[in-house]
Image (cartoon, rainbow, N blue to C red; front, side, top):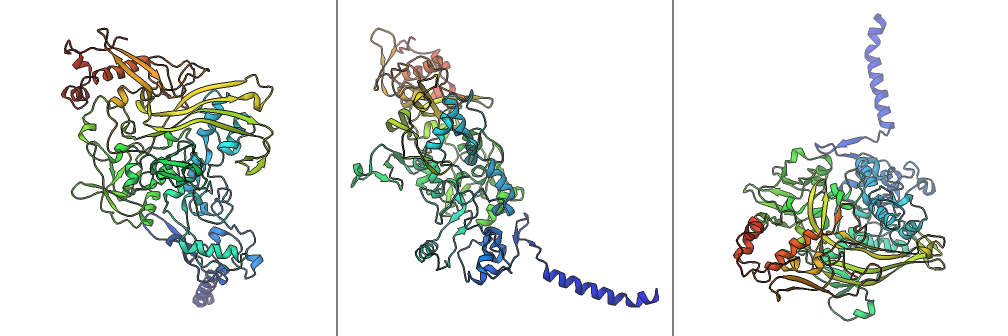
Length: 626
């Protein structure tokens, strides 16, 4: 025992030395906390990568190799100085969803989970509606994943027309995100090339990959509109609408030398119809649609409108904004706050009422004024409350903001779908390979006009929203399957739409209450006849009737009638106006034949409703007899 006591100090010293040696030899991949929300950076400064890739720059602050190394993104062998060995199993373009769990997902596990369940990855709504219309599903509300589709008529239609735009599509070539980009997983939003990074890449390619780039592209949160453009300039064309551009059926040669047109990188020709007021102010898509909506919430939503919780009234509130304090931010939001170097920790920020997620680029100052910091130009924008006209208007309380404030929306009609089994120029957008045989679409007309209106009716209530022709189309089933019991199927479906062409000014009252296209009848002349002592509405359509159902080509419903079709919309909770609703709309239209919309009586109708005014109408008022 005495010998042990005498030896104890030497044993302790020996253990300390051994422990120190072990600590020097073992790479723990340790994490260093950099803020009070638990954000971490990986300390890894012993990789062999930098022996060749010397003095590289261009990295974002939080993805610098000094903090996280090279291997955390690119994998490979960081212990070897041999090129072949160090590059073994290396991922040149990290961030694709096929390998994101080994790269981005090692640090951003929660974000990767959300992305994998987001509609941008699953395309569930797109698949569901297409299979529903082809008669392969009983509802447009089933859940699907685009990568799991087969080769049925609808699936082949998706492969030929739509399956390019999902985040699981691989980014296989170096280079920045542009108008032609599709997919790329995390790269789709977070990859940014500086001018010098582009030049270095060009030198690298031209040198046969011998001149190693000095400037690395950045992986960061600075998402531009260009990142959204590739996919969101298709279908309802939100990206192009936002900038004011409407797709046409013209060719490049048709507009050569003409102003008011723009030819996109894929050679589609657009005409200028008017940009969104927020775009005119310099706001980016991500100024409104934060990471919580873009990456999703981890839930398997059926359609895009279910994944979007932000509403106009969150910023343009009626009385007081719904707010949240910095201390109450979730980790994801606090990271965005950190990365963008915001300084307003002492101020409340707007929180979306529907799900509570914060808009960290907003704040309420000491004078109770609300501001938004532009994520692109960092300019300070004053956020205005609802105007008195909106807040006191009880007659339109169930009408969405965009129904009145949208300047225009895209409208396409007359789409014929036919399969050519001998077409040798086919291309499978999902599998990325050339095939023989593909579906083709022949469109009758594209035009831009104020949106129609429809009714969204579900457990959340009843709201009138913008509507556009979604699928006025025929499908030649026998061209795909000679044994099909169907020959041609015809569908007249409208779709709910968020045009993103908002203006401060609103459409006038007549543009809804006596406009046939707005009500769903299609373009034409809607006339109020009082010649026989009572009022009667008459309608003459601009387009001929479609032989499949006898309705004008661009119509949704018959004049003062109901649709002859069982399926009328791309959504199960969205419909056209009933006959009674049409009559109510046209009743106001009849009043507007004599009374100006800014007259006292029409303003009173907005505040108190029409019923109270109808009790005391004069004998000179001639109301419609339906």
